[in-house]
Amino acid sequence: MSKMAAFRYTHAIVCRVPSSFKTQALGISGEIDLEEARKQHEDYCKALREVGLDVIELPADESTPDCSFVEDTAVVCNGAALITRPALPSRRKEVETMRAVIKKELQLPIIEIKDESATLEGGDVLFTGREFFVGLSSRTNEAGARAVAAAFPEYPVTPIKVSTSLHLKSSMTMCGPDVICVAANKGAQEILRRIEREATFKYQTLTIPDADAANCVYANGTLIHRADFPDSVKIFEGRLDFPRIAVELSEFSKVQGSLTCNSILVKKSKHIRRL
Image 1 (cartoon, helix red, strand yellow):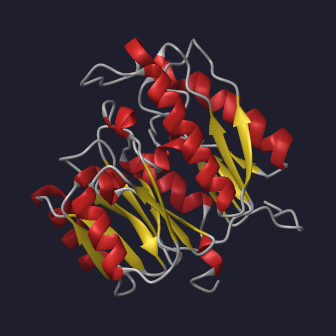
Image 2: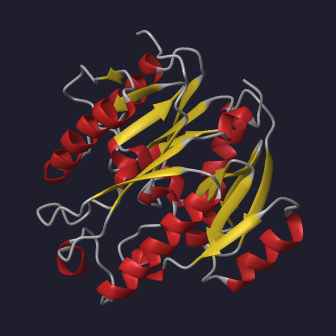
């Protein structure tokens, strides 16, 4: 797979923000403006459409306050979907919904995790286009990392200890072909050093001052990044020479959410993968 092809997508799955998000989302650290959160989510979906994605929008489910954070429910790569096992039982209903949507709307083959001791959330799974790094966090364990390796044997899979952030992708994401965008804070830099020791390839890095801005979406040759961190925006503007779209996501930061959390990106092939 060429390094550009790894970040070519046809579809994005998103879920609208429920009213229960305002008071019942996990880890709330400030008062959430629900209307602003919904507007920010709409702008995010608009950005996904602008990069050429067919956006599948699921209705909000009031019984699952975190349902807009679809990333945690599945890992999609090479035309197949690994259905995850979130650490918190309260999020398991979201997984059931996502399984049905991926099967019905996208007709992708589904891979299930057989080990009942496994926990895995998509926010801990970083795909570089060449290999996977799986964060071992409060939400994902070794058995979860092994499930990723079993699902996608065509790629190296390396577990990486994450102790200072919610998920691996709270500290770093891909911001271009072979370029890792990483926060400047000590915890993120420690994780980066672990990755650099274990990686099968020497990646470039883009270090930015704001931890929340280190989470961005690179798709179809365009970077979608946070608009609400001017110091980090300056670095994106100065260092990257491909198209960018800036979106605000301040209300989602109040529950440790960011850009990748709110979508699952899918490349739907004309040929169905046989498992």
